[in-house]
Image (cartoon, rainbow, N blue to C red; front, side):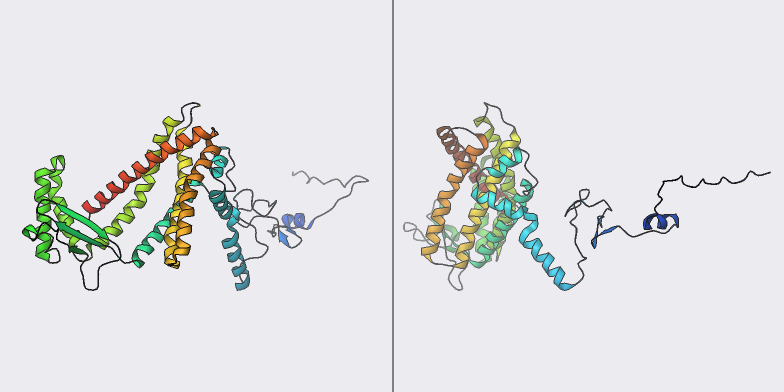
Length: 364
């Protein structure tokens, strides 16, 4: 015999019972919509977390008052994204250009949310810089490489402005004492047979006098023929610019190692130097980019000369002020270290550029 079902006791006197719409819907097994507050949803559309502000505290997605469906709203949202970019882009560029060392110091002190990460900043600016350099090289006329042979050695001279109409990129100017060019090395550079002979003579010279590099003589000949062929110099320039972008990135770790002995007391972490150099390299990319872009806009010396002079003066002053802020040392000690580091930087840059040219040539 089954027992009778339990009967709920009625609420005691003085007890007030209320039934909310959501509770009634839940009791009926109906899925209700997200709660609304003054026409705005209180849940994140991406992860359903409770919204307490403009951005979700869980996933970081921005909350929109209404979905981006109509064209006018889409344009307004896109314009805001481009002009504000969460304010990080413009705050980062402003600090980078006008507050030397501030970004590095802020990152080391943990104030990172309002600025672009250093590596992302470097990648973005470096890509823009090398695009500007490539655009400039395509717009400006290529230089003429003038080759002269005096019977014993070759002399090379790069003449800006590009070859005259119908001329070849590799030309020959005989030395005053030579009379004629031996073996037709440079004189025949404009013909396929002459180029092959010229590169063959280079291979012979490297084999005889190249020392440990003599084993690379056949590869040098192959690259020489590729460079001397039609369009070869343009291809070599493109490869050099492409490889230089990666080589400059590899320069920073090497330079950070060179900086470390300058700051032994108190000891500093290697990453501190790397971060400082990364921000300074980005600044140099910006300055060099402006110097490269400006001649494509105007050819007036009244504009170009003052700007180039100002940029050349600003770069070392910026480096000095940035070192003062990041490392916190005195004026003369900072100036001395800056001079030493600038010398090392120029030497390393020369080695990196030379190695990049050689690599680009040998892999042509």
